[in-house]
Image (cartoon, rainbow, N blue to C red; front, side, top):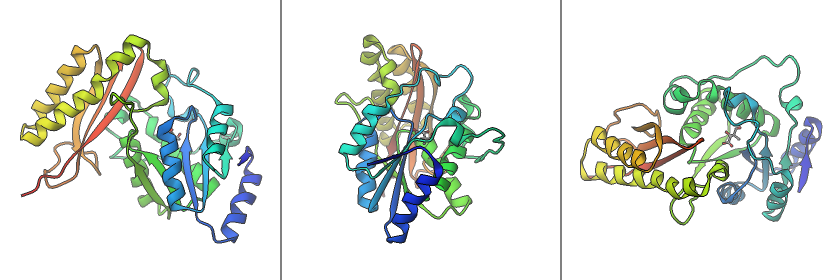
Length: 282
Ligand code: PAF
């Protein structure tokens, strides 16, 4: 695996693949890799001859008072995992390569970015859209892979890629979970043992609410069930919402794919998760 930290070397590496007619997949990450990221890498391999992974803890997507400074950084361990998984290239841009002095541009996706995490974390999705645009321009992938755990992020990136004719495929990969159902996340390491034990209430609450919707309960009832379960487990709830899986707008029709999303804090740690609501038949 080649580890690259400058744009000229990256360009040469990708140029040589393109000249050989090889498809390129990109898995953008912020590092602190876990089995969820490795599932993205495995899926990437199915779509392209060459797999590149980027690790960049993007300051632009963290708000004031968020966890930018303490976000886990484990470059060497990450590099070993990626090399073992047969990744071809690790793109590790320093912050001054990504955002040189004078940097003044921003990519903003309206609508799908506005509610949910967009409302709770102002500017977050502008930061994501901007850095992902830069990563796409730098690596020039044919396909890029993102986890469904960050479901709104995936929707924002799909919208951006379509709107701006970016000419690559975006693939969402199902969330990887611990045995008890907690979604894998680099932020799970922040959880104290008692918080970790309580955190399982998040996927469980979503499951309870999803089953209620499937039984025919309305969204308000189902969301209230999830909120109650989360509060009882010690979470402070940011939101629980049933939305259209593509536009993320409220009050989706039952003939459309729907998604139930939640964000909640346990102690100082904010967790997100989501679950698909199957289409109603008949
Ligand atoms: O999901 C992440 O890890 C980040 O938001 C991403 C897509 C790598 C952009 O910084």
